Length: 192
Image (cartoon, rainbow, N blue to C red; front, side, top):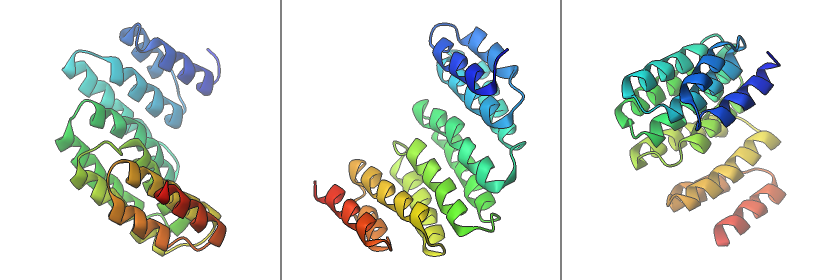
């Protein structure tokens, strides 16, 4: 078998055509990051809800082998997005609560901000209460940090939030961007 990246690509391409083969292939990946993503890709195409739930559980379990809270939360965005797609909103909120609690153990505020942004990016079509929970955490962690990555995450979050109808949150994200150029970019996005 090839690299974990190559195998993940193969799983994502195979998932729609043959979810069973895609799932089997995903389980061969030893790297937790790529195994989690691949299992999420496979789960998204499984029609049997029991099998789908099992593969999603294994996708979330794979994240626990990742290094540190930032990587665990970031890669968990993939199975989280499947929960949004299949409209398992109860499980979505359970996982969100777990992940948002876990990210508080990450010592670096910019890493916390970036991980929570990944959750927003992959779960932006979740119910409004779930999106609000993510954005509250994002803003809280971003207020504790500084730097270009944080500002980029806030700009991109503002664009997502405008798109999904959270104008107040989008404006709040723009207001806390420190870099003038990035703030202007975000303002143009909101004005457009």
